[in-house]
Image 1 (spheres, rainbow, N blue to C red):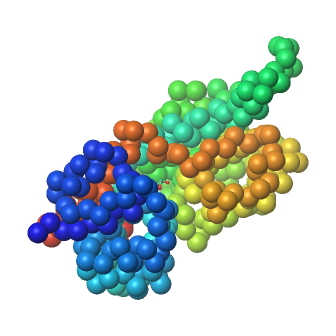
Image 2: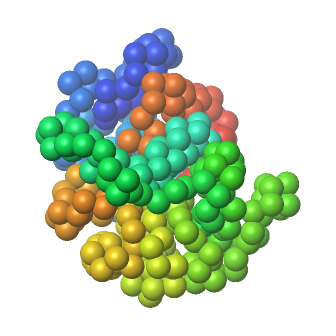
Length: 319
Ligand code: DGY
């Protein structure tokens, strides 16, 4: 008998085909966003759950999962939606999908950086609403990206691909991470021991750190005050790393020129202050949303499940 897998969201056709070939999947063709109660109910008899970051596995939810469930194989690199300590205590295997989405997320990061710097939201709105009247030397003047200093907070896989792309814009790369990277990974990037030491070197700052208690509201008023006046902030990691009130205040005061955001606290119910600002370029959490990457994420989650059901250690085990 093939193992039963509860798949919480609609996945790409190629991924669902492989699921049907190798497993007995419970699919979600209408892509309904399930409640925790529904997930618990639907997973009765399932050997594993293949969820997205849209489903939360708190300690309470994990305690109520049926005994048949052996693993949570996430369709995401981030796994802050799973209480890994509770999962570990219960003996549940948890996996994620690293690496395969680094290129797509780095592309989106570059788009946020360019969109924020070159006032993409304002420009698009002017064209669409027919408010665009003429050209003038002072019309829609933005900030140049080329040759500027880029600070990368979190120099993991995504951060390093962002550095690679930014080098194409002749940017000088600075970074902070918990420890200094080997020279071959730094590729000339300049290390700063603390986020505070990094800030003064950032004409542009992009956040690529994982969500954890240590990184919650990491970019707060104190850190923002250390950025050069007129800096641009970009976030395609998790909303929790930003103190929204502090960022909004800095965007209003002119301390920061602009921000490009793809992720938010409480998304999709984002801080209303962002919607009122013209100097923010806002995307709806689409960092990994390319056809190629979504298939690769699904296959990576399935590789992990294959290993688990073959009694092997999955490649991307996080609990
Ligand atoms: C990830 O993989 O963590 C993306 O944010 C989508 O969930």
